[in-house]
Length: 227
Ligand SMILES: Cc1cc2nc3c(=O)[nH]c(=O)nc-3n(C[C@H](O)[C@H](O)[C@H](O)COP(=O)(O)O)c2cc1C
Image 1 (cartoon, rainbow, N blue to C red):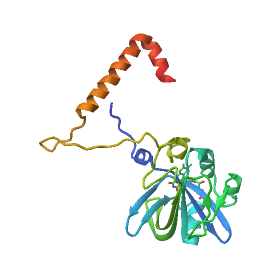
Image 2: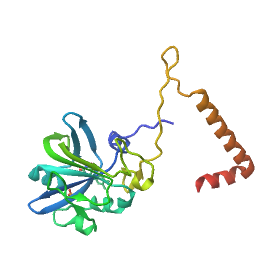
Image 3: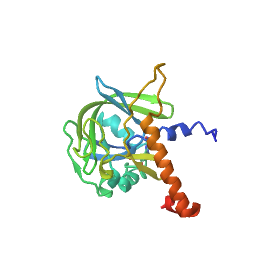
Image 4: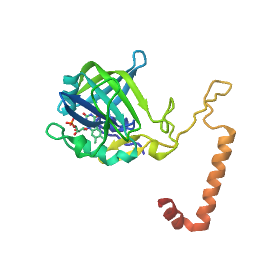
């Protein structure tokens, strides 16, 4: 059944991109905050965007320092990510309180977080007010990634090397289960949504499931799929 949602649900429905931990530094002070609203904006020049509420300390830190880094965590930094998003860094050194180890960036002052999967260093290119948030446009000046996690694309071969994504509230997920999309069209140019092989595979899987259901009884099957 289709359900009418609130207009504000649009933000949550668009959520699952990698969550970014935005690190900043200014006059010897550092800060970090998770930011789910990020987007690639341009290839040439390479630009990325972070959408941040003006009340966040991170917003001031970016304005003052004119730069920021995006650190992309995997599941091992789940709690640290949530912690960094639970309070302002205005009066606390959150990076220290979270027990995170840092290393120097290549091009900017903002520290990079050890244990993440990838790091994007940016100079501030533009600041655009968007409703109640601000779009900080970053000119990418350096990018690093772990070999185990990324090779021109996220590899998603191992859970611990797959990026964390934010669902909303206290819920996160790990990006996984990569699928290959082979697009084929019929003589009329219409999409072949299921090839003969895919249909056979699906039917086989359904038949197998049916057999298990019969053997276990409906209750046993429900119990099994819950586990
Ligand atoms: C997973 C997660 C994603 C978040 N995404 C955003 C975001 O996209 N933009 C934003 O302004 N705040 C976002 N927040 C809230 C800030 O991270 C939070 O207010 C943080 O405490 C700000 O810290 P600061 O004041 O030190 O910058 C997010 C919080 C969490 C936990």
